[in-house]
Image (cartoon, rainbow over the protein chains, first blue to last red):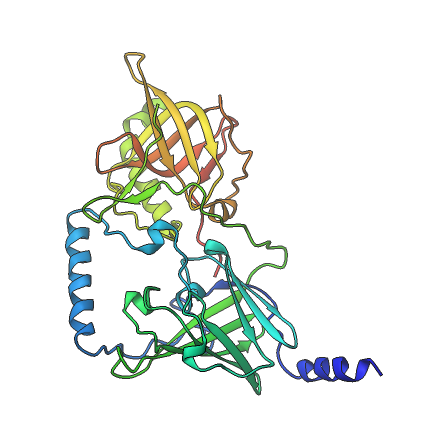
Length: 238
Length: 135
């Protein structure tokens, strides 16, 4: 009898793919199968005054790089990336843990964690406290996990460093295009900042079976931002 | 003889090695390489004072004697432990007192700090500053 509810849930799960495992960033490359490599992103089109502000910020960064300097940002201070940037940081893998009621995603870089609830509805925007991961709910559409996330606070850097408002909504369509490959198609809607939604895809390949996630606690961050906003490295005092 | 050839061509070999290294270079999670002069490569041979297996980066602190016998202390940044483990590093790879040789890209500021290109350990093994993970 006790099996009825639980077994039913696992039976439903058996019809869906299992994303559980550790996934490394897969960028494809010249001879990659186009089915497995990430497709190019759609056009990023910002509204004013955000477009002008973003352009100015990029020009400042380019000018600094020309001087041989990097301007500071929140990640230099080891502040987490949040949703959706955390899904693709350098070459760091992400781990998916899938159960009938929840998919948990752990990014190795900065040990970021997000939880996708599969058994409940999304709240209204004004019911979600703004944060780095917001609130994510998901449902299955065939072999695709569709994830809806709201509640990302504006101070969390957006896609490619773009600004975003508290009204940003992130929709992810996560599926396995082939065994051992995973695609997360991410669509960002923001009626305040974006002229139209932008969509990009993060592709992953399963890491070797013996790979173990490495802890990442930023307790020895020697990088700092000086009074001119430039990234510097602290040296050991002797 | 071999040593003389190596010494004569060290600068050139360094460039080749660094070019190779940076085609498979680690990608930093939170800052770029901009503060380091990647066109300049310096060899540091000295004694390790500490090996910090930490995030967001590991560090090698090393005392390096110059020709006059004076010691200069250097702080060398590596990738994160996660990235280093992919090229054979362990938290026990080096320890204080070890005599090692490092090829580094120095800070543009001229201070005694830099970014590791590769390390030659006391047992002769050469470890890179992280690989690109297999695609």
